[in-house]
Length: 119
Image (tube, rainbow, N blue to C red; front, side):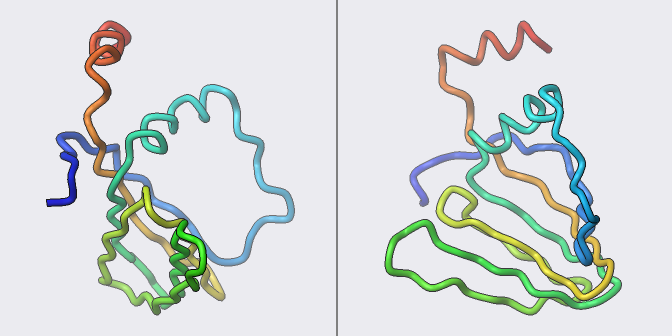
């Protein structure tokens, strides 16, 4: 075992990689709050490469004295990443799409009731 359980998952999100826009859009406070559970409780990231072209996934472990790993991604590739142990970036020469979701660790016991009341 990995020492944790992931009984929940985030919603799926389709990402477009490729040539970046001149200016990225501003992230609003509500958008940031919506992503907070995924980034604080996300332990496993599941990626499905949709294509239509190949790209490169860069995985960079948080541990010191480690080198980034680059993986070629082609349509149909699935990648499972320990999101709590490494950062990740995807590059492509043109538009490429990736579907992602986080497998979430359960919230701390004291926070579970708060989450249920907000829902």
